[in-house]
Length: 545
Image (tube, rainbow, N blue to C red; front, side, top):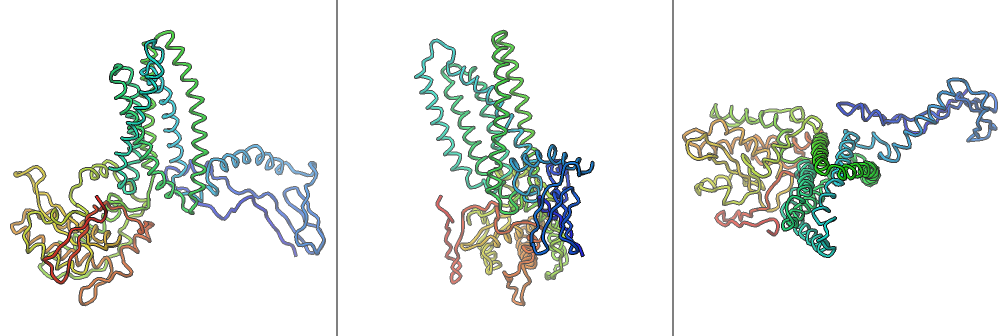
């Protein structure tokens, strides 16, 4: 009887197939575990042989026999090739992977990690090189080489510039900090674009004149401060997305080593670029300025291109408004069609079975439009979430509010729809749904309200020209509410929806979405209703304004 034991320098069972555009890049650094020893242990004698050119000897009573290397002359040609390949090819590659990539890569990171880091490194090198060019322009604007300029005046101007940049950063944090988690991709791209604006202002500083240099450079510093704040705020969400095994510390450490490598490469290339521009400036000053602007423009284009492609690679598993609309689009269309059918037949809604999981798209199947999400961030239309009560029922009669409160008496939210024209009379009416949240509403209530708003909007958007608009809207709200209750758990005979075993939430989890954190973009306003007297309503913001 013999026993064969293979010894690997890793776990060969942990392998993953690479799909999509990043397959080749990931496979290039996917170092497969190598069989370093192949032992054969026999009970017939006291020897243990190895098929890879090593022999070990042991006594029969030895639990772990000792292994010793064989002589060089006993190695075959194939074994020589395997040893040389490991020493000169695989060993350096493994060192590089262990130094710059997370432990267990690619099995310990999310899809697209390497491609994203490559684009991030490319844009980092572009930023470093542009920093060399723009710093030269800033120093020239500060008076370097000018006999009339003094060190004290330059120091004061530098301090004022940094102070104004800090104030601008505080103002930006106050205005945008609540949206960083909701719009990770958008603000990651915004960070690099605003950095481009700041560097461009630095390049323009020498042409602004001595009296306006401070204002131009201060505005550039504000842009760079906004870049650092937005990039730092979104970095945590991106790292959490790639850390599929909870290895955020390892990913942060390896990103630091990657940034160090990028900085070293940028420093070397920047020194060469600075020397070239300096020597050219001595010979032809105008040509040097023109070439500097040409290099800066090309690097800026590459910088924006690399950032856009890197951000597009992200397939975040958290639900914000834009991703939720894309992921649930088929569910909304199906439910809206059922609601329209019930309205057209003028009969009570009949619950219909719906395979929700098959209609929901997974995070890797969607790529939301960054332009559309950015536009809705600043100019929301169609659905307004977490608005004030007065805004939700603006121009509505008292009976409309009473009907909504009655329909949603078992919920932590209620909504209303109105029909307006974006450009005034004479244009096609535009439906708008407003969602009001109650005090104590959970993230499940927020998701239910958002899904209900999408179904309601899809139901009424084609029939907004009906004569009895308010009656039509009230019917749509009532019917769509029963459809939503069917999605979020079966209804009892009393039509009271249960909040346990939510069907659509289980389907989202099954498709790979994270439902414990929702970033749908609700406003801070919450209401509290005294059910004993519905005439008493209290508006309460959920946080201090």
